[in-house]
Each structure stands twice: as structure tokens, then as C-alpha cells.
Image (cartoon, rainbow, N blue to C red; front, side):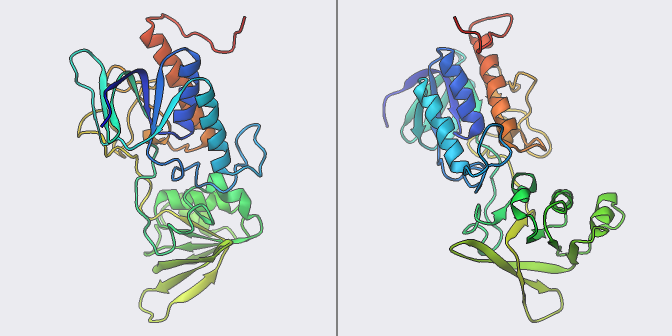
Length: 322
């Protein structure tokens, strides 16, 4: 392990929230380090194409956009390190936060948590293999790529219903797979089933996501009480069985306040209940898991950090140049 490294801002997570925050803090002449476990597994990195980020060509992949964000932050002075954080300590007497990694210990004035909400393993055979290649957890992000196509939505919870409703604007047929009978007392469920392009598969279990070198080609399912499995030919598979969970395994229990769904609670300035600890992006578990929202969080946190560290009474705008 290398010697301790001191920094003004330490950002855990190198997604759009973390990279945007790093860009702003580096431009504010704050010594900034980004600790990123794996740049290829986040929600943006596995997105096949970006069609709803302002100013970006719709042919751009999530990885390409993320590479540009990371490179821009580095160009302005961010120190980017690929390493895993296994523990943080926010209780030191001098107020600094201590971040432990296999590659060294980082002592920082401001700590930013930006690890996202992909905290769950794949539930089905083929899910992980085709993630970002037809398997998606976000209809808002990827639904427009399936205009006139057949897709599967798997899950009976509220998120699955809302995402399936969104897909009705694009897909030719939506195969809604539920392992139980849906709640017909729910208004949104009834609205979904009234859509002419929705085919429900009640009491049916998703067994496997099928595909080839070009991505998803179908799924295998099994109806309860029947011996034979069936194959449904689809181009996209939207899975909402377990739900995404904020990645907070490196935090000790009770380290920061969380809501009932595990999202980290912050104020308008993105600061948690711990002075100098901020949380941005999907780790907050907001219902709006979009790249532009994560980037906005990063900007707000960075300007809040600059104000907090320098004892300012107001925010210093970044776009005024002399």
C-alpha cells in the first residue's frame, strides 16, 4: 500500500455524476481525486446508445460519452484512479474523511459518494451477458430504440408497470411477464392492460434471456402448472424483478442517513447529514435515473463544496471568464 495521499475532494465513483463533480471542482482549483472501481459496469457505461443527453449525437454509446466526461475532468486536473474503496471513516478528529483502498489511503476535506445504484446481481441466465445489448433496466433510457419491435417486460411491481406503460409509445408488442396475477385494483395496472399492444403472461416465470452476437433475440419462459417451456422472440428485455439498489457496501451501518429504499438522503446542496460528505447521482435513489440528472447533481455538489471549503456566503459561478 502506498503512502497516504491528501486531497481537497475525493469522489468515489466515476460515472456522469462523479465526472461532472470532478470537472467543476478541478476548475475551481480544488485538488480532486476520483476513485473508480470499474469504468465499464455503471448504468451509463452499459447503455448502448445515448439519445436524450442534450447536444449528443444519438449514435453515441454510453461508454463513449463517459470516456469524454472522464477525459475532460482529467484535462482540468482531476487525478483519476481505478481502484476499489472498501471502507471510509468520517469520524476523524481533524474533520478529514479517510478513504481506504488496496492502493492507498486518501485523506480528504470533502467526500463525494457517487457509486450509483446497480447494486444487484443478474437474476436470470443471459441477463448479465446481454446487459446493454438488449437487456435494460430503464425504459425511459432505451425505449425509443424499440420502435415497432417486440419487447419483454418482466416484473409485477409498480416500477415494471410504469416502465411498461412508457414502452407502449414505442414497441409494437409488449410481452408483460409476471410470476403472479397483477393487482387489478391498481389504476396503472388496469391502464396498462387496456393498451392494445400489451400481451400479459400471468403466473409465468422468466427462465433465460436468449441472444447472439447482435444482442437479445428472445426469452424462454415457463407458465405455472405446465411442463413445457416457451420461447418468445423479442429484441429487447426490460427486467424489474429485484430492483436496483444504491451501492453503499463500503459504508459502515449508520454512516449517513438513508431513506426507506436505501437511497442516501441529502439537502438541496447535496450534503448528507455528515458535514463535508456529499452524495450525488443514482446513489440517492431518486425516481429520475437519467444521465442529465446525475450530471446536474455533480455540478450542484461541486459548487456547494467550493462554497463550503472556501467559506463563501454565496456560490461562485463557473461561466464568467475574464
